[in-house]
Image: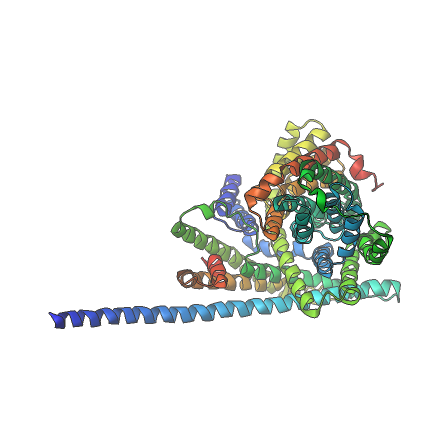
Length: 204
Length: 424
């Protein structure tokens, strides 16, 4: 009898061990993916600040050149305008990471937790699908512009460098959403610290 | 059939909590599929919508507003107002009204202004006995002036959508309606809230020395709207250039004069600005797909015909447009409403000969009222979370101010000269 109990205990402990090891492995993977998501976001932040600094510098020079020493600096406003899609689309991807896009969660917040997670995952999948269309449509446009060699009016730099913001920004958005989808279940399970709770809510 | 597909896709995605920018995009893609339009043109529609010089003004004004708020440039002016009005019954309500106008003249965003006002005023107002819910409701209502008093992101979006409206004209036209609403808010707040003021909180008459000490700092704050808008008013700069000047001024004041902004603050504020711009730009991109769908399918004319059928006179049409925006404003955010509704309603207004600047002001005021109307009311959320009151508390406290703003909207509709007088 006691042998049987010992065997059962050993078996039980073994199952707990393997479940625990699997959970720890999933935790480690989730942590790495969360870190990756944060790194991608930090890169977006740095690019946003760089692009906006250049835009601001260009516009300042354009204004100063008009009043201080008249120069033909039209190409600088061309550069500033060209950077706007980059700021907009990198900013949109960063806003996805930070959960800043405005939505109505009044109904979703009132349904049971399990159903809420399913509905949120469905919403994330729809967002990924839409962003995938943008990557494809943007990529196709970039290809066409590269082939035709079309340039901007004043600065005459290739137009595809502006258009490239669309597939790049959308792809970064997909990375954020996919990583939230993947890490969401794990972070929800062990949602302990405030930061993880926040990420878990965004993820799933 | 295609209308039903778009509507079902839009409502379905909104209900499951998908952000509105994506909901518009997903519904538009569904519409494209329903009418057999190639999806490949979506790329050029989005890039064409974003690749415009006027859009630069949006991040620049957001950046200038955030930098000016960080620099605390208005604090000496508010201190001066507090000192001058401290013997007056309900003086703090007056300070709140003046601060709302000054902030409105620096920022182009409602929720940002609501949060800034709530943070600055909650302490002094509480000391005078006003409950937090009252302070929060005043800050939320004051925040709407960020959208109405130029520089306003709303006017820039309206000009981008309608294309043939002068953005400078809209900026100048927004000054008087903004001042009217500020007066009505202050009056409504005085009538509904002055009873909270503790009589013993009022101090002695200010001394001349006290006033003189605060004057130089207050002057810097008082001229900031002139710096932000003067170039446009006197025709020296375009709106985009004026936005860059505003950023330069904010940086100068924050880093050199008050030394309250460091490099780390500038980085953080730029990131905030980039994200805020991204939120707007994604709506802009999605709405570009939607607008194209609307024009190809002929829905704009159908909607215009429908609304024109209901409204026989231009005034009736403007009233109907305002009601549509007020109702939609309770569930949709302002940026999305501009992009969804303006392309549908502007053609009817043009057909009836309604001045597009006047229409833009009415729409923006109606939209601003949506910012303090539950259940969405973004200004309410911003002010409530800053002051630390529940949404239910602020939603109740703001009702007299919503009523005042509706009276203001009615006056602005009835007297178009309020919007058009300064435009000439």
